[in-house]
Amino acid sequence: MKTASRFTDFSPYTPIEPFEVLSKRLGRDPEKIIKLDANENSYGPSAKARQALAEIRWPHIYPDPESRALRTALADFTGVPMENLVAGAGADELIDLTLRLILEPGDKVINCPPTFGMYSFETRLNAGEVISIQREPDFSINLDAIKLAIAEHQPKAIFLTTPNNPDGGFPEPETIDALLDLPVLVILDEAYIEFIGAAGGRFGEKLSRIQQVPQRDNLIVLRTFSKWAGLAGLRIGYGAFPNWILSTLWKAKQPYNVNVAANVAALASLEDLDYLSGNVARLRAERDRLYDRLKSVPFLHPYPSLANFILCQVENIQAIELKDMLLQQGIMVRYYDTPLLENYIRISIGRPEENKIIYETLMQIASERSLT
Ligand SMILES: *Cc1c(COP(=O)(O)O)cnc(C)c1O
Image 1 (cartoon, rainbow, N blue to C red):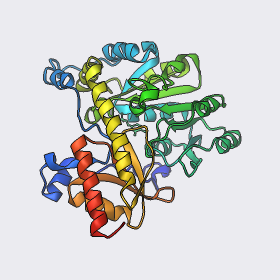
Image 2 (cartoon, protein in one colour):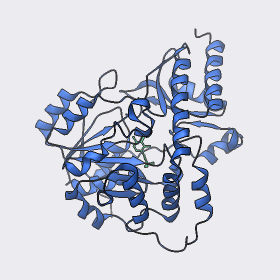
Image 3 (spheres, rainbow, N blue to C red):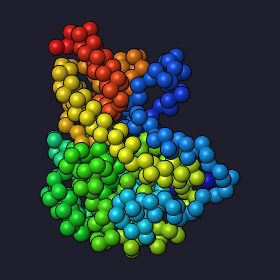
């Protein structure tokens, strides 16, 4: 017996080291670890979500397969009819489900690296072929190359992240319009749209494309509660889907994909928007402050970001070594050393005291190493 041949050289998605494991390894209390490596919300969930979790009355009963209560609240939050909305165990599940439904073996999907790793992972997992159209040096997408690739490969979909992970850049609205005019399904990942700031409104709604989904056949918009609402550990995301894919989606979806805890926590979050928007605003202000501070760190070149993280090019020191030095101080960041991201780190935005500590630790490393 053997597994399908496409898994012979399959490279797994490498998740981050679990918090508890790391805490043991460093001999450091989890409370004293500054976790800035996975863009989680360091303010955590709203107190209303915590309370709703504590008060779950029917954990022994399967959840509503259609997440009706949550989708009704999401319709109100997004302005998209609930018929077009589907909830998932994180946006990740919806990426997988979408590709499962649209790909025949060997079908192509355009990816614009460097970007979120799940798009290429899930494409390969679902027997598709990834066509990579590398981003420009400033991490903007290469629209001309994308047009050529679409003409040459007739891809089933293209992934675009707004703002992009890991650089935090946001395309010009005209660029998104131009992509939407091409003969391809655009899977737009708005995991960080809530963090854009003034131009986006309270939760990014002014720059979001989610309301265009019901009027277009070639747009899917994905969202998550993991970042802005602090629910990453509960796995809850949602998407807006056009009509042609919805009936198959409902047939193919695991009936109980969104668990009872995720459902109630997400609902409670939508009832605590004033509180959560305060945290989002604090994270945005901290992002802009940390960006200015990082510019003064001699061995870092930070990129301006509209999300809750900052990508930095690292000079005169190996990014992996820098990551390990920070880890010894109980600070976790993500590092990259790939052909497209040679010697970079990505720092998630934490609470003010955490951002202060990482900045001071970086400056201390600079002075110890005489990197000025
Ligand atoms: C974090 C992240 C997600 C994952 O969302 P989940 O709802 O936690 O699965 C999706 N897209 C991007 C770009 C992300 O960075």
